[in-house]
Image (cartoon, rainbow, N blue to C red; front, side):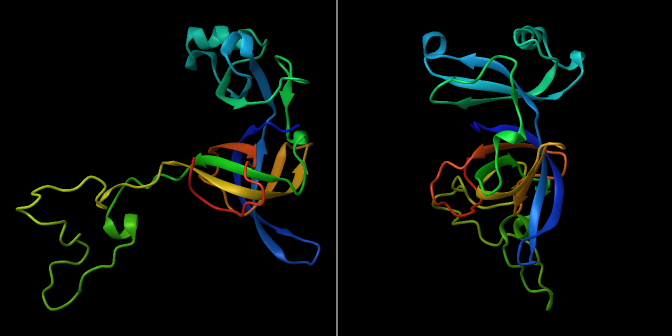
Length: 218
């Protein structure tokens, strides 16, 4: 049973299928994750499992977090995520979640933070076309008109303007796992996933039957 797993993006490569065609893939080092908490209907009102991933230094977490992790008998884990489940059968505190819980051909949804690009202008952030570059034009990469001055006399919320670009959580849905390497804790996923190499990823079984690979959403 695969409930979900946390991993780290290693980068992109290519994978040759049975027909010899090169397929772009992403390599993900996933797990092993430890079960740090089991939530039940009696104690929390719903059933869920919390897992931890990525060891870190003890000084980087606070005392409540240390006490919480001590209940599962595990070390200091940096990232915690919770997954709703229908039942907790087969799951126990301190147990391991590994890539062996997934299989080749399975569809998964991969969530992560996109690469941050800082403060960006109109062309880079929204794909606006530029103004004329000749004849004394002073409007090369400017926004142009942003609305009437008298009425309404303000900028409407949501107006596409320059600002922070990237660094948002997105989900790429219905990606296919091409290979599972349990010895090296690797998942070979077809296509691209959010983030830069080294960023945290959340891999879950696809929740849309027959869905096609898409980007966006949460």
